[in-house]
Amino acid sequence: MYTAITFIAFTAFVAFYSWFKLRKEKLDSKDGYFLGGRSLTGVVIAGSMLLTNISTEHLIGMNGSSYKNGFIIIAWEVTSAIALVVAAIYFVPKYLKMGLTTIPEYLEKRFDSTTRTLVALFLMVSFIVTLLPIVLYTGAINIESIFNISEVLNVSKEQGLWITVVSIGVLGSIYAIFGGLKAVAVSDTINGYGLLIGGLAIPIIALVSIGDGNPIAGLTKVYNHSPEKFNVIGAKDSVLPFEVLFTGLIINQLYFWSMNQTIVQRALGAKNLVEAQKGLLYTGVLKILVPIIIILPGVIGFYYFGDSLYDKQDMIYPELIKKVLPIGLVGIFAAIVMGAVLSTFNSVLNSAATIFSIDVYKRHFGRNATDKKLVKIGKLTSAVLAVFAILVAPMVANAPDGLYQLLQQLNGIFFIPIASIMLAGFFLKKISATGAKAALFIGLAFYILTTFVFKLNIHFVHLWGIEFVLNVIVMFAVSYFYPNHKKSVEEEHDYVEMKEWKYTKPMAIALCVITVLIYVLLGTN
Image 1: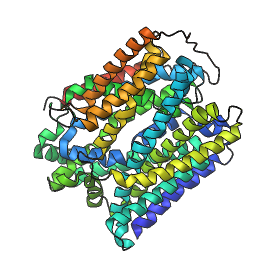
Image 2: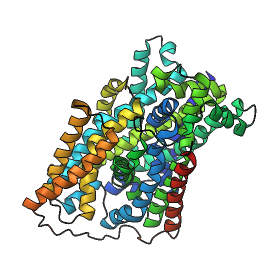
Image 3: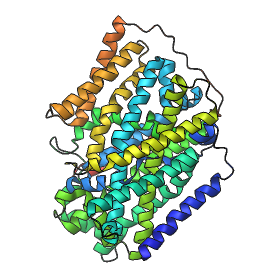
Image 4: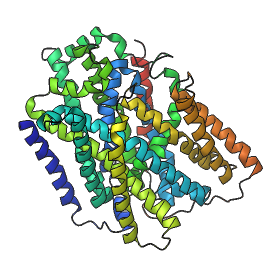
């Protein structure tokens, strides 16, 4: 009962605070609804980026994976810092100069309107098929496990999960539909820092308990119990071999942090370049700290439970929460977890609504649509996608390598082809629109066939690297026969001030050095 009261109290506080901050905002204009009125600060951008990225698919999925595989999966996190450096120094300044609302807008300026529409539709499908259902399902696992909803309502475990999925889906939709990006970003900031504090509390309380009051002694015990779990260098046959850092992983990270609408939309809503760069580099710092929250608890779970949950790895984090947290804090932490779910869910809904309204509806159905009409279409899109996601969510259960690995495999279907043509757009001036479109479809077909049909004995992240090279070859070959005649004009707008943040380069260097040090220090096990 106490758990439920603290849960409701914290969730209500976040909702009230978000409403209070937004009560005077103009949410019926395009910039107001989709870009938070171009008024976001560095701290809000970092909190929102972190929470849009870190959701229950990380808390549950990555801790489940580290419980089984150890620290080798840290590569997913710490290499993000390098990609965020590239985004802060190169990509986001370009986007802000062009005054973009969506990433596909750039593709029309560089290639043509068909490429823009295709990528917009690719993104919409990827949101519905991969990210939204997995976020909803992992959130439902956590909430069902903490509150035993199936027992309380006297229904089966499966029905309990369904009820939780629908509840989270409806609540997340309300935020995204009625508040736009600013509501998402403001609620994310509270939940984001709540997640950092609450997430850090789990391993710290566990280590204090294991070490009889001394967390360092606790960490030493956990390390001595299974030192192999702390090694960050993955073997060739492991779930994440070390070599993937130099093939497909860096392409994926560049895409995710520099070209992914759901993430970059926060930086596009910055009040100026200084705040955008602060937000991106603060996020880089947070990503280096985040393994303490989403990897270490899984290894501590192995200390407590041994291999008893190996066939149910995605249950390790909820079990650890129940084991180590005092009863009064379980409700608050469940509310923070709920916030993490809602954050990613409503961020993706907001980005999908932005892409559909600006890149599909305005271009093909309502060229003269007013801002009010676009906002209305955006809200309708969010509602329809939410219903689809709720229906698809239970289908992602029982992923053999865990839910996080499944999410990454599915992401590769869309991320790598889009990353290929975005990078070609920026760096290879000879690539034509026809070449870009050919690479989109050939890359898509190659990855689906090699990952899900023929199942080659090659790690899927290596396949990303192979696909990227294939896409570049296809683009050059097709552009040779159908050359690029379009003069790429990067118009400059003065929507926001473009002065660079003075600490951008020192922070960028520090983040890159720390990332390398993590591998040097933890790779010698």
